[in-house]
Image 1 (cartoon, rainbow, N blue to C red):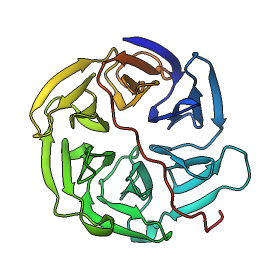
Image 2: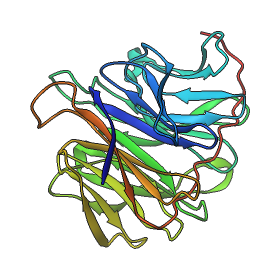
Image 3: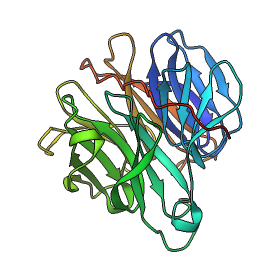
Image 4: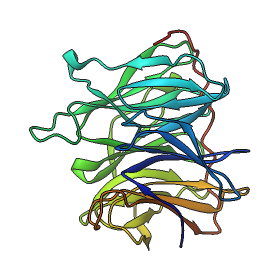
Length: 285
């Protein structure tokens, strides 16, 4: 396993962007960064903290999470808010996100701040539709995290970290979801970000467990991949043929407060490419 970058607080949101490289965020330190295929590291967007999920948008920019779901263009310009928080109704912000084949955005909301003491309140799972509207498609997610679709697009996987469970939902018409089901549970850490390979396996970063757990499509454990740091926060597939597994970490459990890192493991099995977001840009921050 190769360490490609380090010196961050809490690395999250990895996504492979063809022609650019690996994009990722630093939740605590702020910013979105790009690690190109030749190893060059660049700042894409500085400052913004709390980004737990990133997706490529068709209009030459990124969709990012945090205090809201927003579009930020690679060419600069105003930030466009796609979905705002509503703290008065139990939504203090957003964490990880993904997209379906049509370009809808699925994102989990937070019922209370993740890094503050006190009662942890549940959030929900939202979808932003192709007309720009948003709605709740699943409720009662205690700490929303990784999201990803099966190869046929008929199942959505979703980590609830505080419940140490990866749930799944059947995807029905117009992006709606069926009832929540248990896909897999962990007893040695919390499921965080996830990715899906072309054979239908679900690759889950285990926060506090120092590994990536790989589950078969039926939820049984295939293997564990050890990671050099305990706070393994997310994963994605990348590289020209999508057979490189990129693993990102935070600083918890190691000496020093800026030890978050980016690793690469060559797994030889291709992952699914995350589709491009295609929701309209119809509101400005």
